Length: 349
Ligand code: SAH
Ligand code: SF4
Image 1 (cartoon, rainbow, N blue to C red):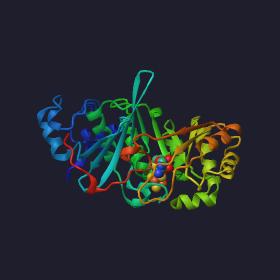
Image 2: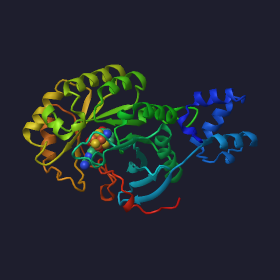
Image 3: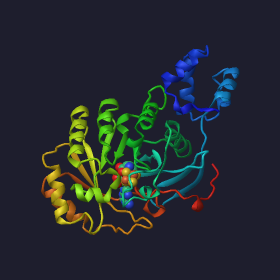
Image 4: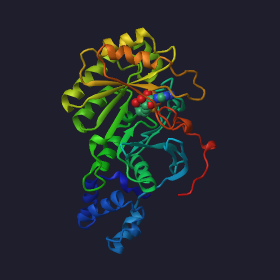
C-alpha cells in the first residue's frame, strides 16, 4: 500500500533517502515542491531524476482526498467539505478578514472526524467520535486550501474534533507546516483550541511551546461544566488552571479563555461572578465571549446578555472581547461543523 508522504517529517524523509541510497538533499527538494510550490504529482517534480520520480510514485502518494463541496458566505468565509478515501468527511473553513486595507486568511482546521467530548452545544460533539485524522490528513486540508484560495496567514485548530485528543498527529502536522525548509508558517500564527485535556497542555508547553493556546471553558463551576461538557468530567477546573499557569510560566504566552454565552444556561450574574472568581489575579488570561451559533437538534439559544455579561467582567478587571464567528449562515462557524454526506454536492476543482 502506498504511504502518505505528508506523514514524514523532513528528517524522516532524509533518513529514508539515505536508506535507499539517494542523496538526502532530495528530501528538501520534495519538501519545497509539495509545501511551497503545491505540486501534488511526483511526475511534475522536474528537479528530480525520472527514475526517482517513478520510484516515489510507486511508494507514496501526495494527496488522497477530494473536495466535494465548497460553500461561500456573504462575509467571504468559505467552507470546504473534504472526503478521504475511507469516505470520512471533514470540514475546513477559510475565514477572510480585511482590516486597514489588508486581507488576512485564517484557516480553521479539523483534527478528528467527530469528537468524543459530547459537548451539549456543539454539532461535532453530537456526531460522536469516528476517528483521528492522520498527520498527512491534517496537513492536506491546509495544502488544498492554499492551492485553491491562496496563502493562509493563520491556522486555528477550531474545526471538528479535539486537537489534544489527537496530540501526536497534531504536533507532527505543526512541525511539518512550520518547518523553515518547507512552508515555514510561524508557530505564533497557530492557535490550538482545546476543551482542556490537562496532561497534553503540559506536553504542549514542553514540546511545541510557541503556539498559542485557547481554552474552551464555557462554565466556571465544576457542576455546570460537567453538565455542558460531559466528556471532560474527569478533568477538574482547578487542575486545568494549574496546567494553564504552567503553560504561561513555560512559554510566556497569554491564554485565551473561550466562554460561549447560552441563554439561561451560563449567562446570569452569578455565572459572571463565578468566572471572575476563577480568573482573579491571573494576568495572563483574556476572555472571548462567544456568540452561540444555533445548531440543528440542539435546544440552546444565544444569550441576549452578552454586553451586560462583558461589562461585569470588565468592571472586575477581566480583559474581555465579544466575538461573533464568521460564516454562520453556511453553518461554517465554530461548533456548527458536522458532516452529512446526503447534503453535499460534488464540486470540481
Ligand atoms: N475541541 C476544541 C476545538 C474545536 S471547537 C474545543 O472545544 O476547543 C472550536 C470552538 O467552537 C470551541 O471554543 C467550542 O467551544 C466552540 N463552539 C462549539 N459549539 C459552538 C456553538 N454552537 N456556537 C459557537 N461556538 C461553539
Ligand atoms: Fe469536541 Fe470541542 Fe465540540 Fe466539545 S466543543 S464536542 S471538545 S469539538
